[in-house]
Image (cartoon, rainbow, N blue to C red; front, side, top):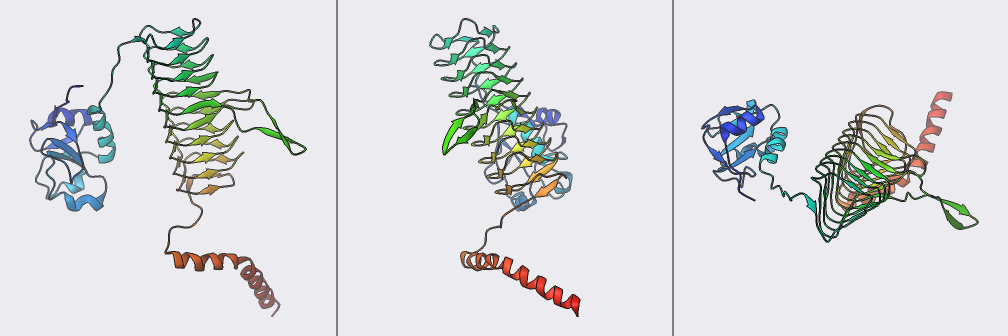
Length: 342
């Protein structure tokens, strides 16, 4: 992998940025304001880091117009520095490009349909009647079960498992350890014993879906579990059977979504949230970290549950007060009744 280097003029053109300073300054990487060298690009997207602008050694800084005044170094002015950073980071990404073909140590069923430019690494297993479209890349030791369909330019990293009948759209990225299509947690009770309910649905992913490492998406009981276009799922997320996640929704790590819940479009769900089953979450909802959602959300907005961190002794006192709330509510109701009688 050769080192990448761009002039500021080239980067400015890529970002449609307003360039202030030396257009021929050469940039070979990205770093923070505090750590950047004269050949690296930095950015400032949070005002609390403004104090580092005066001392940064960065070759250039991505910034908004209001921060330009008083800055003497090279600058690329954009409306949204963080979004610009996201775009420019892709210029410097270290990409691994494999030659198309099937490693002789892979196991591919005779009935599988592979386009000529597909890459399959050592130890991968491709089941019966699998379809791999153009540009698909299958990592080492990944298992693709029978009847799966994987869309154009999608990537499954090493050690991914797709059970049978999983369908993926184009340009998806599935990180290592993810499991798609495992059985949903469906059981019926028979006099104290559990009877398994066969999970007859599948898993369907739209286009441009990213699934984080060790995330699990269960197959549906009868209908498919569906993940919409542009959804991003962090590491170690549990998506239960029959869940539907709307397009461009983002879910952070360690969140669990119980069965048959429907999450709308353009939602953001922070880390370690719990969402119970058979709920509907309105499009445009934002749920803050470690919230427990036990009822449907009908209007977009920000929602939270639980309490924030506080000193331990204060927390102990508050727990006692919380346990007294029911008694306080009864006493308050009695006082209000007495006042209304008077």
